[in-house]
Length: 123
Image (cartoon, rainbow, N blue to C red):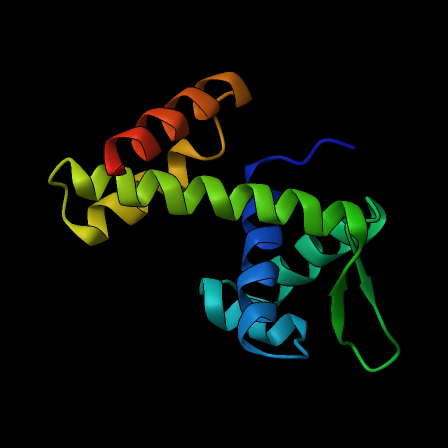
């Protein structure tokens, strides 16, 4: 099941939150993204149905293997693109916002080339 941009946003948010906290719930995702409870409930349901996440009986959310893999990929794209844009002189806020949009549409082939170029530039 391929995820649309909104599902990817939820997955990346879960990944980031789990880096900071051992346990998270839907309310934490809503606070992090600034989304309403019904929106988060729908997003969590989609991720659960796609087997990207699991939700235990107490409402705690964990990433399944496929969810973790995709979330790590999205987070890497976001991080590399943000740093690259900042290296080009874009302010951090704009770079972060633009990277968030780009990460969802850039192809694997183009991202690999951008990443290689950026890492070569940093060396």
